[in-house]
Length: 94
Image 1: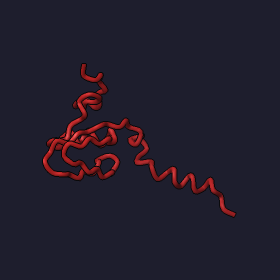
Image 2: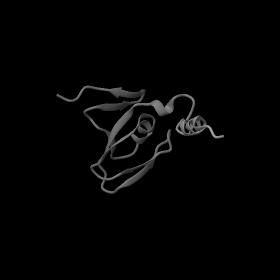
Image 3: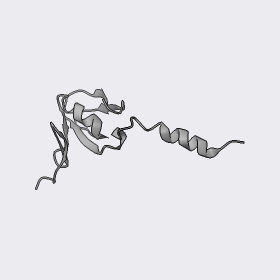
Image 4: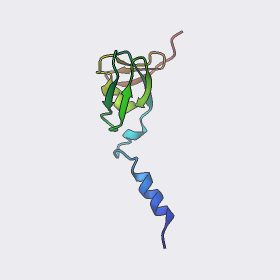
């Protein structure tokens, strides 16, 4: 006999990146202002993001911290900003 609960356990465990809850970080919208498409691998999740000029992508908060160092890749100004100490959620510009 098979147990369908066993499969749910296997599938549920595959999304746990690490035990400190890194997969639970908030998403951050990043906008790319470069002239050519770039492909970036998230440092925390290992997810591959493809940015094209003018595009905004929602990325994992843990990945966004290191992506800020990439020229032309910035947080969407109206919702989230990155600081040296982490993410800072702000009010939209008035």
